[in-house]
Image (tube, rainbow over all chains, first blue to last red; front, side, top):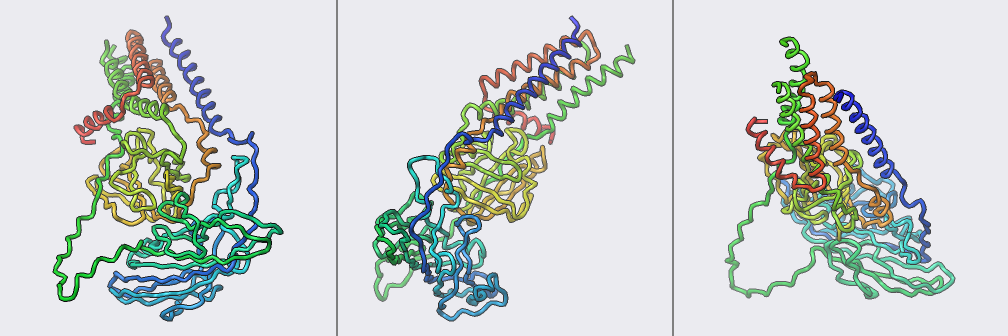
Length: 317
Length: 244
């Protein structure tokens, strides 16, 4: 038996099998899925929202040893579809906000904010109203990705979704500012543009997560907790006549208000010592790799044996 | 039997152990793959072509969610993955730069997007705080092929949005590549090439038999996968003896 020929034949078989196998696997991966499916477009909603306003009350602390500014954002893009945004103009502020030296949105009147001294806790309030989409132009909030629907005949109501945000996301943007509490009241006007009465579920257009719905008018039919984690999205079952409109108003608070502890009474000193803060939990950075040292030794041994036999051993033979 | 033959067989046995880790790992995940992102946490980094499930069992099962850390959207998330072998999920993690996007799909939460803010290298003994706000940390070994240090990618959460079943169904229909069989083929191919070029005719049959035996061993591991962490821990121990 000629071992060299056997090796060549086996190498060719293995190489061809490998190429064919890899090609098949790659081809399967690249096959466009869904080409044979029938796609239907979701119907557009007959209702639109206008007159969106937000009145926000915030208690915020500056944890840094130098002055910080807390600024009002004019443009919200958070959880909206790519390219979508809600633009706001400021109606009023309390206490009066000061104009910033620079502006992210000069076209919306420039940026305003409050000066917070080192260690200071400040209560501020402001009211903004949307302009353009959801301001004067009836609009809806689309699920960023729910463009098509394949589960015919069940069609979702994509125009009646909610957007959401985290009230304390300010702490992620600027860890020196510590948000203590947040309360937001939102209003919007729902209008039916169709020539017939329509019915459906309407969800609050803007919802903070980790927050509690403390007020809604009309009363929310239910709070949707399935759509976004840690959120209770106010939802209303509405029937609205042809060309009719209806106002909606709702309030969320963060953090979720806890029951007030009973008053210990006058004359009782607050003698309870402060608990010692537990150490910050940490995790080890696990070993995440297989050292290649032994692999290199294996390669050197095999290659060394090959070279030794081919050159050195041959010379000594 | 020549000394060179002993060297070659010893070298191929060592190399086969590394192949055994990869074959066992891929064979294990190929048999229990579940790409439905509404059921299984999923990490997506298009820039470095990471599209992989996250597990809560072990780093040796792929990308591992550190159980002491939070779920996305709720706090600091820590994910650890191998840089080499075990599918090498974080092989190209060092290519991530400030501003790159990372998406975590998490059951009951939705898609959570992060933006890379920095990457840095720390000693292997470093302990990471899991109370750093809504931040994602991706951790792997550094440098490549060593466990001396750790590479950490830090990213801030930017937005959360719900699952899109249309996209999920498109992506989950992809057939997984049978990497374990490819690795077995690669090992056999390398062994045959080695045998072909081996110049000691009397021992050539011994080398060929050893290669075929090791290949059968890998096929056995493919059919009946063993936990790759057992093998890898032994390899790591030997590497430690050599101070690699």
